[in-house]
Length: 131
View 1 (cartoon, rainbow, N blue to C red):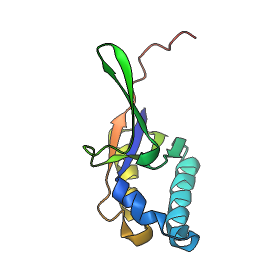
View 2: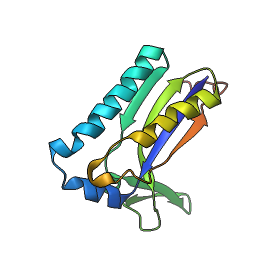
View 3: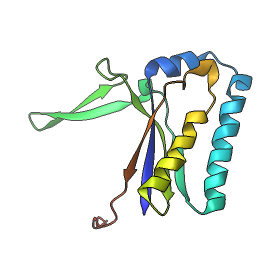
View 4: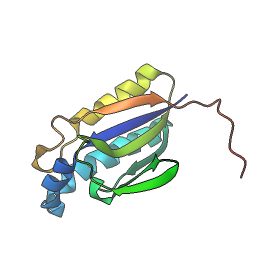
């Protein structure tokens, strides 16, 4: 079964990290690299991506059936999706244990101290769209 591990952040956290230099990110990058490498070695890795800061986001909604585009960040939003992993593992509990390892990720200015992530099963029974 595949699971999506969603990591969240805030614009404030992105701002705090913006002033950090490459050395400040070294421990975080090493942790993330080892985290993904461990998943590859266990055969559970499918994909991972980090996402750009919320200020580089566009929200598309509708008003009276017409698309409305709003540039981010959004004052009403406290947290934003910062990145994700897709894992293919034996159970929801295993995916949760994998996500739990992210609590140990170091970060510049300790911005991840209160970070959290969500684990969600990926449905595999939806039909593929015809292209």
